[in-house]
Length: 233
Length: 218
Image (cartoon, rainbow over all chains, first blue to last red; front, top):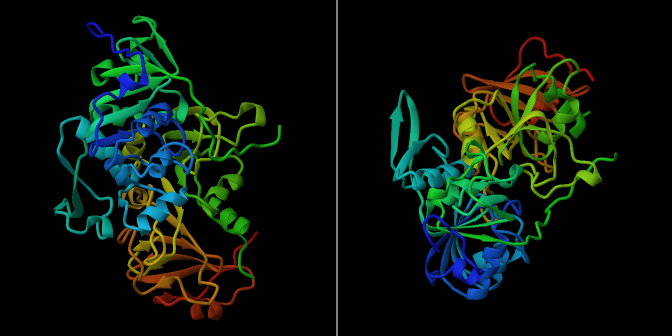
């Protein structure tokens, strides 16, 4: 590896240094735009007691669900975890802790974390169980709750295209939490469908500038669809 | 007769205005998209990062990278924009969305809403609901008026954990359209063939009944 070239040769290299007890931030919404091969590599590594930050937790046999299968997640920070029977079992048995976080607050926690802002005030969740035990303040007559931002030891991200330097473009709604996750990892690892030479991507179309990216790898993706809804032609 | 799900969606759709950016929740709110009145244009916001949601794709257009907040495959209409979750919730929390339509378990006379958690049952999460109710000026809650056992869901005070405090002004149920004013539900319209008395019996929170309560027309 030299200069700004972020490419690594294997998934083992991509997640080198990931050990038990770390916090991993994962991009994706449902199964859309999830870093599926990096998740599979975490399964292979077998690391345990992870704190995982992601909007959802996959399904039983795909995405982050496979880490539940391996009993690798100790604590989950998410906004919605409905699609997963294993999740329910482990939650009820006490193996797994969950911190349910409003989706916009979760996005902002990552954005703020990546931007060096340790906490922020939001109206979301005021007067609800989410605000319990948190500091409150009134601005212009309205109540706000103080939310801490989130950073992680690793961020795992799925992009569409990137250049060697880690400038990333996402495709359609597979963007979702990915660019936020990318800013909030101490080590940010991005997997993409295609890697091109520097200069081939139009600079003004870059979603995640390479400064946030530490390691980059090209993968092949199943890209499963959770609910294939169609209309007749 | 209580309204059907389709009639509820149809009634809510009459609140749409030309040029509105609208977020529709899962369930009956989603059906509102099928009844957008002729001659007006609205842009549907999906909180996973899509402004300008189009219809479901044709089978040959199916794309794993193109979904809505309900995780269904969708298309983007002409003039759509796609962005990150932070951008999406900046729109929502910054009050830029003109109308939010969502479901609930309970609503009370102070405009508080409970929609995400029933203690003792598995909690799946609030998703974007807390952000939506905190950020929107203009919210319509769509729900059945009472449980199957006849227990009112329009209460003096919500009993379930809240989604938001004092944020709701308008409620459409299968029996009535109501507005919340000064700590009471005001009965504005009733479902065809449903009497004021019938609605009164199923409304636990204070209900104000104007001299005339028109029937909804379909």
